Length: 217
Image (cartoon, rainbow, N blue to C red; front, side, top):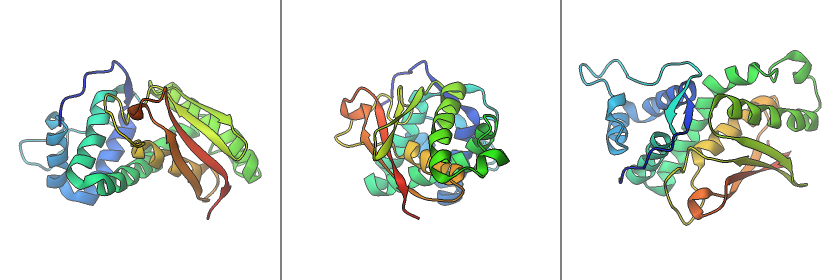
């Protein structure tokens, strides 16, 4: 796939590390290495014995380029097709938050006992802005939340998932997976309908997820 120009924006190492681990668990070391090569990220591959990875460290330093993150997501779709790439992005995003994002959320009190006993609507009203603040603080992805009545608008600008790419449909499935898992954690195990309705890759000003307030499970 064509190289993507560097953005000057960065994502936290920890989230990327756990997403790569999830991808390796699904497609195996060799499958992931093929994706990394296709994305132009061969420096993340251990070339000596293929047993030790060169993934970003499990810290919160903002060091993983948006362009590299976008290239990784694009390579999944290029190799596995739109449907397969979407599923892998969603899975990697969910694991990325389950293993790394929860640690970030705990820093702003989302995991506290006082938060856990709140009614569901109060958890969403307080928890979503808190999670947006986490990503704004620990990455260059500036996230905001607003109430649109039937759903919450979760806006990302700039977005690491589609940086430098163009599409005729929303393509930020890794972000959707992260937010779905964040909702599962914040709500105490409930599932919610999440749809990307605006995407920078389509020419929109920002990427926006509609998070519907009524749980579906």
